[in-house]
Length: 152
Image (cartoon, rainbow, N blue to C red):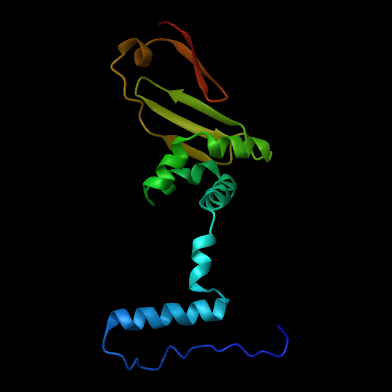
């Protein structure tokens, strides 16, 4: 907006109100005024639109960083467990191939990007199947499926 000088509050000035709640309310009103928001605008926010925006943003993060999002809140944990993020990644052409290797008799799994520049150790696979971890086998990952070739 040309010709309008925005009012920037001085954060160094001591607040003159004694109540913390009043102070928080005044600060919130000040930011709403600066942003041009009205209190009734909150009623018109489409939650589906916010969800889609969250999915679009998270889909652009590297897959190696997804594990950190589970600690934000239950909403992000549910989003990670759904296939929505991976569907959006595929639609946007953001899918990257990874190589997943099982090494040794211990349940160690490693994940590499296609250029072997990024390496991550995956969590241990809980299983009581002795043959799975102690037999001669080859593993191949295809999409979201893990194919084990060898002894049962």
